[in-house]
Length: 93
Image 1 (cartoon, helix red, strand yellow):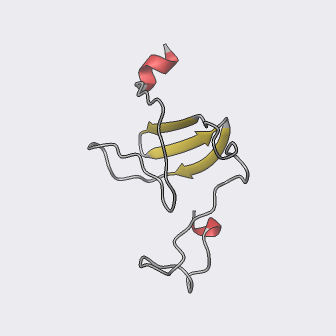
Image 2 (image 1 turned 45 degrees about the horizontal axis):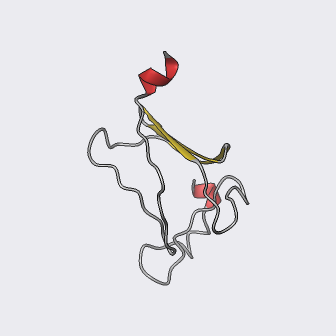
C-alpha cells in the first residue's frame, strides 16, 4: 500500500493533504448510474476487495478481530442496492 500512495512529503491526515491510495487497477468500476458488484473477503488478518471481478485492494496484518462493519464512500455519494454477508466456511462447503 505504501508503494501505491503519493510520496511521504504529500501524505497527510488532515484536509487538503493527499490521503488517496490508488487502486490496484484502473477503470474497475461501471459507468456512473450503473451498479457494481463488490466482494469483500475478510479472512484471518487479511482483507481483499474485488470490484466486478478485479482485485482492487489487498490489506494485511489487520488488527481488528471483531466489531461493527461500516460501508462508506469518500468524496462522493454512494447507494447500496443489496448487501449480503456470508461466512467464509459456507463458501467452501
